[in-house]
Image 1 (tube, rainbow, N blue to C red):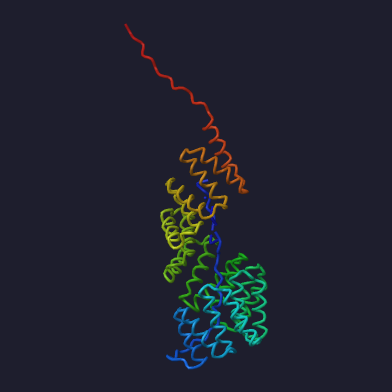
Image 2: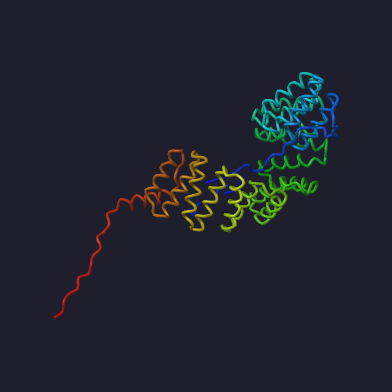
Length: 378
């Protein structure tokens, strides 16, 4: 089955999928300034580029930062800001080139190291990200964002003590740093220190009541602690603040499923797949809810969709096989269980019993029906 982005279907055992809590990276450092209408020099183009950037008009922002560089090839802010625009428009290679150019011009420019670290993080090059964040805090020991960002990398590497130390340092520098509370909560959640995780998420929410990610993460922690009412309430708030939070719909759906509220679970999984049609786990979990509702054809359709997205996930074959068994399509059930095992799965005893039953029903010789013969009475 699927996984609670981290909760846990024989109705079909309730599984749980895990983007768990989402780490919140500090955004690349930027300078927000007013825009001169007609730039006359490098600084003017850089300022207007920032205005375009803040409006998410990355094409014009990049053009103006480029003009700023043309005027002054040593303008490290223009290189760094153009790197931010490239990164936010998805061109991480160009972003890395610009951050590196800024560092070459000014090897003591901590902001460029931090932002290059964010690009390496996005590319999964975690060792390089750690190196850059470390260089940033070496240059500027009061750089809370860089400590926060390095803590996120350490968390992904399961270096939890190092991660906690970085978040604590960030909070020592800036006690009102909501992202650091959220991210330290993520580490505590990974460590199953749920009370501490809840405390950090709650502090983040206290500092910023509009912080949707903290509500979502606290809801996930409540769900893992089987505090389902509180989890549902937090997912509700997260979705009020961010109606496009796919993971919040998915995780609230798992809470509803765990409470046998299958219709509500179907609604939330449907919202999740409408927002992200490639979300295989949401199709799998909606199939489980349909199975529980005995809507077997709908369940088959959802398992088909999940398998089309990710053919390598064994459990979808196991549970689709179970659904085919309920529909008395025994050959299809056996075929799916065979695929499940080929993909490395091991059928539990309950499924082995179902498989034996399916084989028996396919191979048993039917007994002819006897027809009563009327006896004439004279």
